[in-house]
Image (cartoon, rainbow, N blue to C red; front, side, top):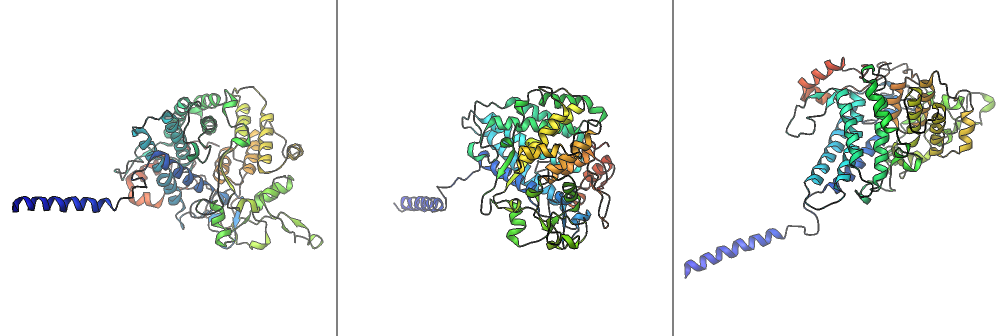
Length: 486
């Protein structure tokens, strides 16, 4: 009898322990993640990084000479290492975006739930991954790719940048083919297109158009580039067609979902940036109607007679500047609810103008000048101007499309249009070679055409880093990347 009681006592103790452990479980919260919950996090991290003006990770508005600095002009002088800017850019995209997107893909792939929208979700995740990978290639050149997201591989090899880029385009081809507009996707969890698959097809196709054009100046890739561009331009209804279809994220009024530019500057009480003389003088000389949407006016003290006249005044690049003496960005850009944009309609039209200029075949024909005019008009309207404003501006002798030097016409207007999209402004300036941006008097180097590899890579992945640096021609900011041929 005693033996039986002992056995029963042991059973009761173990049963009680199990029940006590159950008390620590939150039965109202999920214990595992889902791809549908990880995807919007990765999406927001991507937008935050491309939108922010934090000098630790996003300095392209300074490199492009849209802005310059006040007290600490290091980044305007191309000093990248003091704040480990390449490391932060690298980590933001690899860790916060690509790794999360990879996790989302894995969860969606292995889910046993019957989901008719699974193929769409996987394609959309991949499209955003391709966009992110393209930013890395356009920044550094050769990068870890095929082995990059394996957490067990601490020394991933660097893949050839051109090979990676072409593979990304092939991935887009498959993603576009795999998306079915008759089925759903992420619905409200998608903060970019709210799950609308047709919009994602247009974004993917527009991205493919841009990526194909990036390869156009490489002699060995001329056929591949043209084929890629013409595939995207074969049906213009499958490209972003107006500003309502822009790839964008609408931020909310309070942290942590407000616009990071608001957090970086007004909310923190900082006064780090003023408008650069380079862009302000250009827009003043051309009477650009977007000035009022880009900048705030300052009192013009250049002459005694105009001391009370308000004007747009830009500061010299790379010097210490008085915050109160120059124009700063318009208030709307600093709003907590300002929209973040990673692709816009004007970009499509500028790319189509370039395609026609290169002799490519596009849907509906149309002249390079007509697509150029549509691009300029789309940008002006996107910022708040009118069609009439655009018509007047396009008649300006500085703005009229030049079919001979079409790179200058398109390049200048892309640079102006992408005022708040610094990375794209930098990429197109490097590719089109306009405008010619002259470094400030204290610049540490010539104009940077790439970022140097992260310092962490040099120390933690030294063999792969050294091989990559040698392969691209040296790990310097002046080393032109494989697509930058002019």
